[in-house]
Amino acid sequence: MSPQEPFGARLRHAMDTRGPLCVGIDPHASLLAAWGLNDDIRGLESFTRTVVDALADQVAVFKPQSAFFERFGSRGVAVLERAVADLRAAGGLVVMDAKRGDIGSTMAAYAETYLHKDAPLFSDALTVSPYLGYGSLQPAVDLARESGAGLFVLALTSNPEGAEVQRAVREDGRSIGATMLGHLAAENAGAAPMGSYGAVVGATLGDLSTFELDINGPLLAPGIGAQGATPADLPRVFGAAVRNVVPNVSRGVLKAGPDAGALRDAAARFADEVRAAVDAA
Image 1: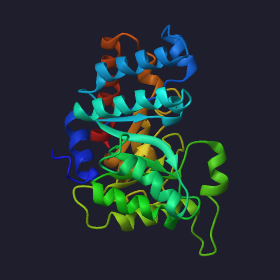
Image 2 (image 1 turned 90 degrees about the vertical axis):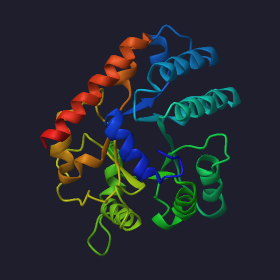
Image 3 (image 1 turned 60 degrees about the vertical axis):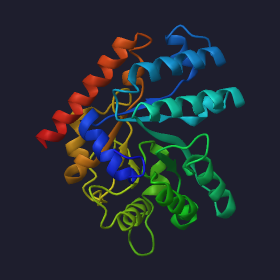
Image 4 (image 1 turned 180 degrees about the vertical axis):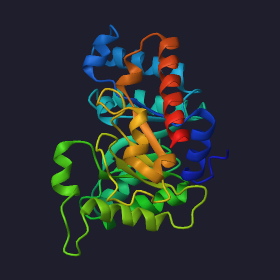
């Protein structure tokens, strides 16, 4: 599929052909140690290269956590740049997990960093925080549309602290999380086969039937594997929107490394389990 196609269309195609799975690339110190690697730039390079070589042509979506690369300074960012380029060259979609959020020219600069087609870190989509007001994200919304990229907006996150903001109720009786979902549904109106503006919604949150999750866009769902949720939980949590869920698994796959075959087997197993759960819903 042409990279000029909107992110939502490319994502739908990738999940239908490669399987509905996002693998997080989270090279934190404990995981590097578990792989027998030092917590330094060489360890980071070895870890990242192993994941990319093993999975780039197998998995639909990858979500590198920018912070784990940034902590090594410019050399770590260089490793991230190469990983993004190589993943995309192999047909994988990259969701940069940077959770950027600001106002005005600063938000525009963040957008240009990850969503401008000529940027070294250009990614297929970016996670963003809307808690300076959804309107503060407009530079990212506009540039994503222009570049054929997407956004994943923090709406109902799995961390317990998130509820004090996301479930707070506005004067009109709607929660903040529901308000964010409403904004995204408006962005995606009329898009086919799926819009490019998604929400981050934790797979560990249980019954979300009081929220309108069918936003005609993707739902990035962390929490599968080490955080306790399973693929079988997805229909119960996401209901009618389950087909648009992009379940993210990080440690559940990465702990199988550094053996490349074991990494591929773990990713394939999760993708098969998610597909079976969605098909049975």
